Length: 200
Image (cartoon, rainbow, N blue to C red):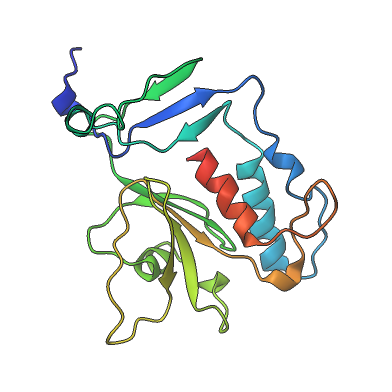
């Protein structure tokens, strides 16, 4: 089947550098956690399984649209050295948004125009992981930008769009002491966001 530039969804397509060995993401997360909070234990187990399937390449956040690179050459079209992987997404590929973190239902859900993070969490029955003290969740947009999206929309709260292919991450409560790095020190939710961004 012939595919032209016009058939490619450049916003969701990615460029990845092949690594000699996969990043050891599983070493960043504690492998044996016993929590009294059953919901948190289940959510952590699901998240840990997701992160234990690391890619063998690292994402390079660059605009792949040929029209953009032609206009902005050479800054937007650098010479590549080494081994690379180009993953092209067809325009007809269904749009989705991934949800993970302190939630009951991890996975991909249909992208909906105009949906907020709260809309996605409600539709996927994932509001249970939101505590009274949470003010925002994190959204990793397809271009790698990490944003905070408010949970409680006020009248003057500006709308924040969520693009197809984005990841919504509901942070784990800091008091759960879920994640450890190789030195044994605690790692906050920011570490999880970095892992998820790398795996997009």
